[in-house]
Each structure stands twice: as C-alpha cells, then as structure tokens.
Length: 119
Image (cartoon, rainbow, N blue to C red; front, side, top):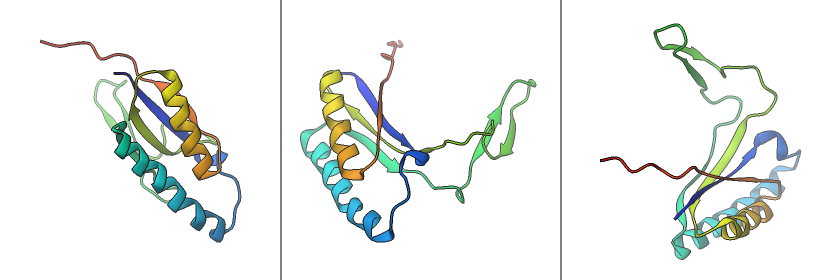
C-alpha cells in the first residue's frame, strides 16, 4: 500500500493568537486519533521551530562534514508532517484535508516512491 507524506512549511501557518493555536491542538490530535483508528497512521509530529537544533551533513568533500544550521539559507522550513499508508491518492487527499482543516493552514501531499524489494 502506498505511503504519503502530508506536510506544511512553518511559514504557511500565519500569525495567530495563543488562544487560536490552543484551540487547534485538540482538533489536530482528534484527526491523528482518527487516523490511528482507521489503521492508516504511520507517524506524525511537529518540528522544533527556529530555536530547535538543525544540522547538515555534507559528504561532497569525501568526508562527511557536519555543520549547525540548514545546508542552504532558506526562508521556508518544514513545520510538521504526518505519514499515512492508504490505498490511493484520493484517500491521502481526504486525510490531508482533515489535517489542514484541523490545523487551519495549508498542507501538501507527496507520495513516496515504491520501495524496491531487497533479498
């Protein structure tokens, strides 16, 4: 069964009050629990914002060089995601719509490439 990444960039969230955000958490958790009950949940979580640790691993010099901070300067960064395992694109879109509605901001949906079978 295909797996889909449902995610948002932190910059898509917008400016809201603490009270507004406080009301969104229970709605989002209700969708996560619904995913679990439906058997489609693989993993979900929000990422640390600007103050959280970010590291880069760059192997291009022959040795892996680890540095603090993102590899490239960017104005957008991943805010959170959910990974679901569902039958098709329509089911993934349905779950993404539920998450987006609960959170109150846009989300994108990407299907993972099929895993090659290894022996």
